[in-house]
Amino acid sequence: MIERLKKIYHKYSDTWLVRLFGKMYRNGFFISNYMAYLRMKRLSEKKSPGDRPAEVLFLCQYPPAWNKMKSVFEMMLKDSRFNPKILAVPDNINKPDEKIYLFFSGIYGRDNVINSYENGTWYDIKKDMPDYVFYQRPYDQYLPKPYKSGVVSGYSKICHLVYGYLMTETLKDICTNKLFYRNVYMYFAENTICMEYNIKRFKISHNKGYRKTLNIGYPVLEYFVKNKTERKTDNNEFKALWTPRWSDDKEAGGSNFLNFKDKIITLVNDNTDLSIVFRPHPMTFDHFISVGKLTREEADKYLKLYDENDRLEYNNTAEYVDVFWNTDALLSDLSSIMVEYFVTGKPVIYCDTGAKPDEFFEELLKAIYVTKTWEQAEEKLLELKAGIDPLKEEREKKIKELLGEDFLHISERFLEAIYSDYSS
Image (cartoon, one colour):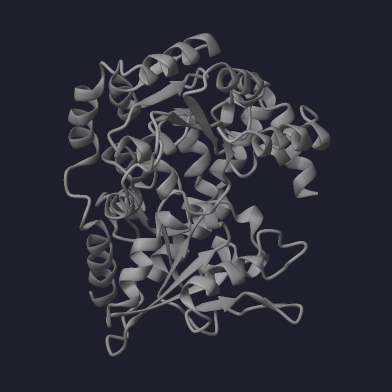
């Protein structure tokens, strides 16, 4: 039923009625919002045990976004003040399997990872009474009932760090929706603009100290800087990373995937010193197939082109830091990927889909190449390949202005903020 409603929403999301309904739904309704306010009040009054480490649970269902919190979790593992665990939740709760559990337990071992679904039963978080629960995504619809934010916030403090930089007002409305965020006790905002936005809309509970919004850095930037690798190349080939968005729904930012996909192939075939790494959003093919804009056969046929050409690479790994450092430029639709790539100092080409930028994005765009058509994007790629990069100095300046200079201690600040709250 939920999948059917999502298809209908995305198919008609450009109509005013569907947009209005979507906004009303995401903002929640008075009674449920008030109940969430009371839960926040009770949680804020909860006294710390003080005689044991803080129990922190990372509720993980989406491996591609794990690097957003990875450095925080790994630092907690080494800190005696914390006892962190990962709760591995199947990505499809209607057909649960162990894929997500095997992914995380393969990295951190079975002692640090809990299998959320065994013998037909969901693991009971409440019996452990964790002090804090980190959510990867702000969407309850992907979770089984016992793990929904409204349930968990009844006994644990929910923490959230958005899985992607939010750079438009529409995306703030969707990705920090009140339906979920009314249950968030501690929000780690990615910048001052998002921090002020959240404080303003939950003004009373912030003023009373029932919830917290902090701006202390974005951990994935620390992760990228600490894991920098040298560009691996045996020739003068120019390698670009292409990251199209998953939906052409303007409400979700828009996508150039259908428009660019065949032209990318032609461009590579016409330029023997150019290669493309294609890394779409994980939902891209399933979404366009579900709304009838692509068939499964067409998707398979397209991906086969990448198998047959050494200068075309399809990348869908959960880990992508190495891909960033081993490409020369980024071609992207609206995505927080642009911010993460920006830290490398390499050029970014933004394929504008008409999304209205917020103040942060407006400043970022001053150091990014903005294109509105395929012809403009192609021209800019070829210029960069030829070494023409007039925004290089502006990028270096904006990295410091917008993202800061201290990327190496962001996780430390996260731990101090959590433990300060725990011990107070």
